[in-house]
Length: 557
Image (tube, rainbow, N blue to C red; front, side, top):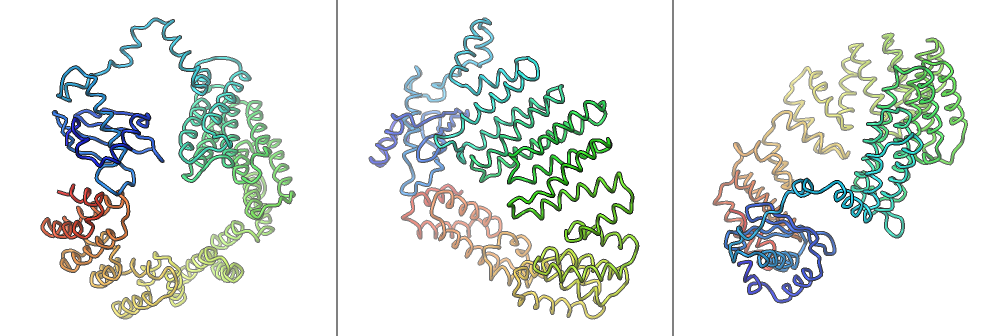
């Protein structure tokens, strides 16, 4: 099929639809990759990418679209791309030789370099008249003014970015969120590059407020908004770290800005970010007056009773700040008393039990760990934490039987690192121990059982058991084929075939078919070209009514 006769080879309905896309301007971007390879961005129910590769005479060597179309080898998006290519080539003067027909545009730098200052200014003004965000970005980047003016310009840029990406309902869609975050990130670069440390902090705060607010009006399915908040907090942290050697007056101004920001209502419902700001305030706690102001602020927040299901977590984090202040600037007795007064919180329990560990009072460690295991029994993670501490105390006291029992509990709770501990404590027949443990794990009803069982047999390089596992779970064959192929080549090939057929039967769109073909390519390395060809032919016969699948299978060489 040639770019000059493709209409003769394509279903008329698809041809008409593709032509409508072409005429309707649905091809929004065209790239010449060189070597007669072109990439088109085609707008439909979504944006799709079409790749077309030709030879020097216009023969279509390869054509692919990432849309889900499954009723023929050529979709309407590819047809639109063919018409676009035909337009490109027909506008050239050089007949049918495609490679010669593509003219090379002048480099943009070469074009602009020949223009006068006035012409360049006019171009920029014309462009920015149609792009408010670009205009504001250029003003922020290149204009100079006092701090107040700079801040106003940054706020104007933020507002224009928000307007650019929000829809009629004031919401930023999933597809727009990444670009929104990227443009907001430019302001963080401004904050990093600003020599005025107070202005840099104010710019970062502007971004932080908008970023936290964006959780309410943007789709954060990919975590882009969360990333923007984290990146902004990192910039603020760097600014604070750079203030350690400044004079007291300037440090106090920075501290006051941080403390004031911690009161911002934007953090209502996002208390962890408020706490991050308060932690940054501790960088200035060497100044007694500022330390006392920070204590008063935290105590005020602790006394508040917000309608918040995370109040206990929030209180614990703020109390940790107060403890650090007492530990660093108070007496040892005050710090220890503070721990005792707050043992309802996990972090303070840990501090308390570590005190006895340092004092080598391991019996007290065991006593406390057992008490808290019972107290926190509804929280599996906490119970595991106290068990691990108790295990270390048993180890210090050389209580082997207690260690053995607890190591097994921890292993069955999902902590594989205790397998080696447990194995090291066995004094009898280790083969018998392994076989008994393996059977227990296979029969264990807890959700950790199979995972730990698999890790144990891999640790012991038990290939017979691993082969049994793979036969029962063919979807795992690719993970272990290389490990098993030398000893069980025929069995591995049979399981691989089963896996390929399962993957094929659950496929419904081109991307699924491509994944099946990738599996087939890897299968070839295990089973050889002949076996690959046999199963490929079997699939082509089985799925002959799925042309997109046949198309993908035919590409396998």
